[in-house]
Image 1 (cartoon, rainbow, N blue to C red):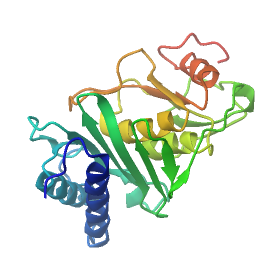
Image 2: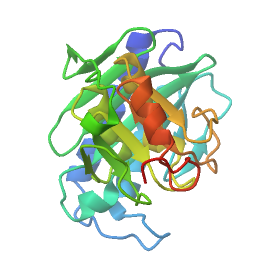
Image 3: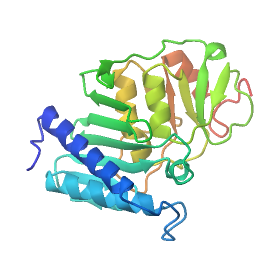
Image 4: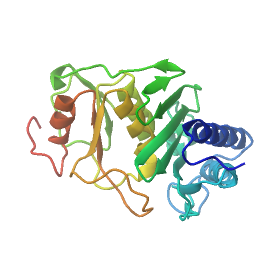
Length: 258
């Protein structure tokens, strides 16, 4: 059954169905090793992708997937999906990997679901409707001073940024959700144009609806449906944290504090 494009409940239901199908496909996949298709792609990625695309296509939604590209681009709503964010972690049974889904309409980010597949934790958000972790409203930590902040990193920074502590966990969607619920105070992608929209869009909506701020390090729009496009997401519990972290990007920042 197709999901009405202006019905957030229907869109949320379609994302739920896709996440369930992904989980079932993964648990039925015996080989989680590299698929040999292209570097960094695993059998688990392919199984999860096939399950997600099938469900979302049947719901009348377009899809932009990390693994298989763009499907039905003429449809009014496209779901940007990373079927298995942190697939290297998953292949090695490190406990930080997720499914990320974000419905994008003509107004932008509409409905999001990020599921920690190892622990079952679910972050949800709707445009203008707040964000939840396992059904309970969440807010960021409110941290404003980088020296007090615990920061998630993707990639290797040029040096110590002046934060209190840092973590490099290996799944950007979960890192950003951790900023949303106050587990982390900020997130800095230290790479240069390596992350696709599937890595961060779902968690971006969660973070923003929880009161956080998320931006590209170079000021570009994070919302893109171009499979080839890459961005550099930076997030903060507050604007001062985001600004401080953006200044610390090893290529595009000012280098203050390094």
